[in-house]
Length: 277
Image 1 (tube, rainbow, N blue to C red):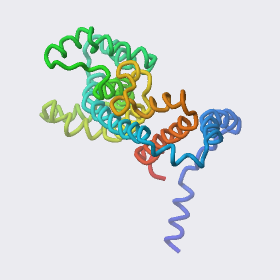
Image 2: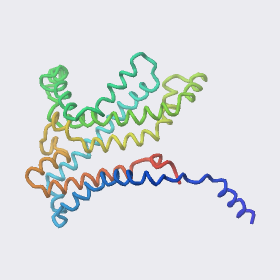
Image 3: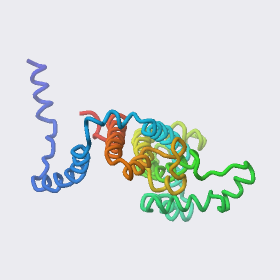
């Protein structure tokens, strides 16, 4: 009886879930339809009987392997470069940091083709950094697998930086100030205090970066081209097949959607869902 009364009291004190106003359901349904119905259109258009054979062609498998490999490499690059950048943007007090933040987030609003052109004229045969790389190594960056990774990193890293910087600004710096007051060095504060605070946001940022890199098209085709087995990722393979075999293009598009949904559904952290329920 005592346990039952305690459980009842806990249930009474638990705040009720906020109800969603009815008027919001209509635009929400329209927004959901805008996302779901195009995918349904692909399913309706696809030839399900040919789907397995279309997905196991050598070009399709090569494009899938290349996409997964380059997206993984670019995600690692995003973490290595983006974590320090996010900490600098969130914690630095140097003049001009706001302008620096605007420049870092530029790939979010730039058309990917513009980003590809910028990379081409930086690292290309006539770009000032490309000339230096060619002179030092004898190799060229554009139209290689490395160019794919660079293009994907360029467009995906801002997603990671936005996630991490927002988390740092939301958590405040009081714990880091206390650690500094107790005599911890800046590197120790970063490693023992700042980095653990970043872990939930780092998980979501990694997922977003990987998904964005996996679907990258414009910057890749401009900077890396579309060479089968070298630079032709899955989005480029969809574009190529759309010109010769629309059924194959639809099948590959569905495959890309399935892979992206699986990545987001199974790799995203629980914090995206508001914690445990």
